[in-house]
Image (cartoon, rainbow over all chains, first blue to last red; front, side, top):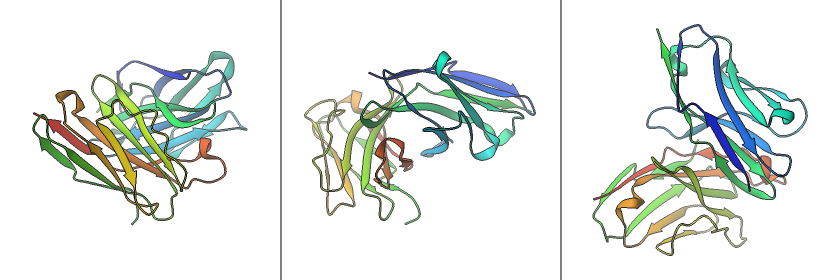
Length: 113
Length: 117
């Protein structure tokens, strides 16, 4: 079985500060990892995904994530937060023959001016 | 259309009534998914359709829930005899259904917010 743990249901950062959203996964096979963002009253939008190859993945809006197998982590970062980054972020995993995404509980990011 | 669309955007119903939620996937996408997003449970997979194959219903929480996909396009999620715990946002997603479904990007609709009184 697969599972995803996102540390911190709510993270606040100042505008211009580093954004770090943590995600750890559990999977018995090599996972495929995803980060999605959800703006208020909207559906989920893919930020980035890791399948194979380079472990540092760059996504949209300046976000990136690094797959660290030894730490079973896939943390999301952005060097400088913008007000428009305020949203809820979900880490997800697929694999082990399952095409259904298993999501973490989500982290709500607030950006303080 | 340009993206996944869902209707209605909001649905309020009384306990015990049946409801139907609709999803229009991105044109040409053969794979379609339903998820439920609720406060207590987060995002949960419900059901998956791929082309003409039998759907994967492993995530449906009870036999009150069913879904169909007509003509390989539009899908309807039906909840019979609704209960208050069914209140949630129901999200639909579609993907191209290519040769690597595990890595396919799923594109999500805006969801239907269901409230059962």
